[in-house]
Length: 448
Ligand code: GDP
Image (cartoon, rainbow, N blue to C red):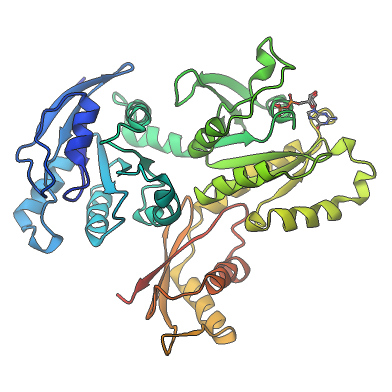
């Protein structure tokens, strides 16, 4: 079997060569601050875990703006991508996305390449989180992996992801079959503070009839995920702090709440279940955890666990529902499930909710329905006047799924007030589809 080829691609100056060098652990290509300074394709064999691949630094296939790329050169790009197992598409986490990035993204889509999006220069985490992240989804390659090639941050995660992607895309079997399988798997993490009942709930889920459970290596070192098959559905429960407690001797021990491990698990998930102890209520920590999931475009579900311990629980669902809507208003689209691990209340509901939320994240709204809703909405709720002009929307379309991303073309794309953005989000949920459990991302662009 031939070694798979992994190609690093990106516009000039995003740090491809620095990343290449960081990944191979030696300085092979020349790095310089000027665009286009590296001349030749450089390649190197890399061994990571039990995977071996050839890493190629393209050094400037895309060094020219789209308009200047000659037909012949375009052909070369298309041809070379055909032989590539995986593309590492690098963008600049400092500058943000430019039209060049979108052009490259288009090429990659056209060639059906398997892509891992890498956001380099992401050492300024806050700027990256707040300003770039929502935009990144619009490229259509998911949330990407933030790294800093220069400061050696998160490179191991990238290497793990590459190795895992190569493994799961089946080097010796038919790629399409395997990647389909991969996408059918719903990745779920159960998060929450210690002792809220995460591992009890997990055990109740895998204790359901029909559940076939196997332990598999997780995507990070030492982690063990659980693959749970129920009928036609496969769920991968990501190993999170506290989930496997029962299988260790420290069953009852109070463990440290580990936010970084939680974030890590959230990043790998499609759907995040936040478990809240109903007798204690929603805490500040719960809010930040679910906020992280929302910002990263994950599906969210809230489980009010230990519901059996709430007095008069039968009459109090509405009260708790209102409480949830008030405290977690920013994810008020999430399903709320009342659970009890020992009494097995709400377990089936939880499984149904996972499936429904994942469906929402994958949903694609027809452009015609979206624009009909937009027309109606702007008539009933006219956009405000900014810079002496009324904000106008020409057209809207959904450009991404997992999570859903919508682009609105406008005369004043940078002046849409937050409240009106929220109004448009509500418009989508109320007029078109509730997108249960899924966040919705909006982008505003100048008229095309
Ligand atoms: P974790 O730290 O979040 O994984 O919490 P555990 O699953 O270890 O649960 C902590 C404690 O709460 C254990 O003593 C469980 O038996 C208990 N517990 C968990 N879920 C429930 C529930 O729904 N009802 C009741 N009454 N007790 C629960």
